[in-house]
Structure formats: C-alpha cells, structure tokens
Length: 319
Image (spheres, rainbow, N blue to C red):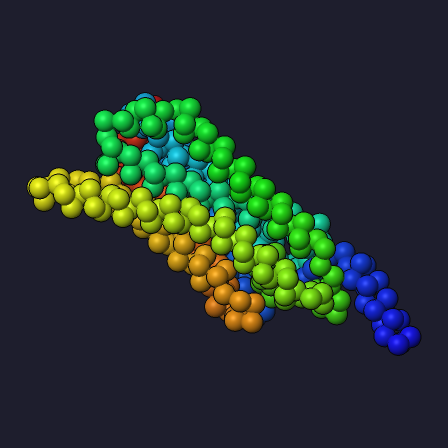
C-alpha cells in the first residue's frame, strides 16, 4: 500500500514537472525533413497569397459587397489564421533537432486550432444559409441577409467556437502526463495528447465526443438541411437552364464542404482505440493545409464575379 502511494506521488510529481512536449512531425526520416519543409513552405505561401487576394478582391469591388462574399472574405481570413497556427511551427520543427513545444504553447496552439477550425465550419454553414435564402426565398433575401444579420451570424460563429475551444483546453489542462511526452503528430491535437495521458481518459473521451458532436455536427446538419431544401426547390424549376444556373452558384461551396468535413469526420468521429497515427496525419493535413490552400482556387476558378473582381484588382495593382 505504501509503495503504491509513493508511486502515485512520484507519478503526480513527474506529471506536474512536464514543461514541454516533443512533436514528432510528419515523418521521423531525416532525409525527408528538407523536402517536406520545401513542400509545406510553398503550400503555406500559396495559402496566404491566395486568401489575401480573395479578401482584397472582395473589398475593392463594390459588386462583391454581398452577404455571400462577406462570408467568403471572412472564411479566407480564418483560413490564413488557421494555417498560421499550425504550419510555421511545423516548418521550424522540420529543420530543428529538438522539435519541442512548451506545455503552455501546446495548449495555446490547441485552443486557437479548435477555435478557428470551428469558426470555419460555422462560416460554411452561414454560406449554406445564404444560398438557401437566395434560391428558396429570393424576394426576402435583402431583409433576411441584411448586414446586421450577417454580422450577428459572424459574431455568433466566433463566440460559440471560442467557448468550445476554451472548454476543451480547460479539460485537457486537468490531465496528468507521466512517462512519455512525445506527441506523435505535427501539432497539438486532442487525440494525440489524450494518448499520452496517464489519467483515466474514458470520461474525457466521452465529454470530447459529446461536445464535438454538438459543436461540429450542428453546422454540418445545417448545411445538409439547407441543401436538401435547395435541391427540392431547384427540381421544381421547369427549365434545364434555370436548374443549372441555381446549382452552379452552390458548386464551389459544396466542394469546400466535402473537403473540409470529409477529413474532419474521419479524424474526430472515432473512439481513441481506433486512432491511427499515419492515417490521421494524412487526413489532418487535408483540412489544415490542403483545403485552406485550395479554397481560393475553388471559389475563383468557378465564379465569374470573383474572376472579374480579381482582374479588377490586378488592373489596380498595375496602375
């Protein structure tokens, strides 16, 4: 009994003394570090430049001062912040021998990652609502999607997301860490950190799954409901040209939703026992790096108004 108490005290003291974690990154192969650094630096720069151009094009063209583009410009801004929370630290670690992140730094990264990722999902839901009103109730569009309502939707998205992130980080801060402090990931995500804890994480897993379902599934169900209504409305349009025109305004948004939610659902809606390091790293790269990089291309290549806005921005820059 005495030895058990001593061991528990030793474990607690060791867990309290942990001041940093080691992030293993994408690969432990030393020959891959520099090529991976070059690839992700390029992707990060493309993400920043592409999303900044989207924001500038929307703000410089009065024709794009509509609810849809208001949400798109905010989505681009969130994508810039989102990738900046993850990628710069990952790039440093790819060239570093230690690959360390402080305990406080890990929790801070987790907080902003969760807050910004959830804000992204709520903005995608807001954009789906915008398309729903525009297609299903066009005569009330100006009233339903007025600037005040759009700002309230944005503030609501940010508030819910940051409260969710705060709750998650407070939950993680009560865990104890014992023997290992090596995170088998390229950033401080919930599942890899839970794996390290020597606390009983069964209750934490239930709480994490429950509130993840509440916060992430809510905007996803909102998107599904919106598009079911849109499909029903569009199918009632008699002309094929009218149907195509209505669907074409939703194509870009649906592509982004599929990329984002496909990888998020794969990573987070499984029990901890099914956690796979390699598969989860690939899926996480999809929504933390690839999707924010592709968003500007998806929204500009298939959107005539955005193309005109970007051309107008280019002409202004050349002047």
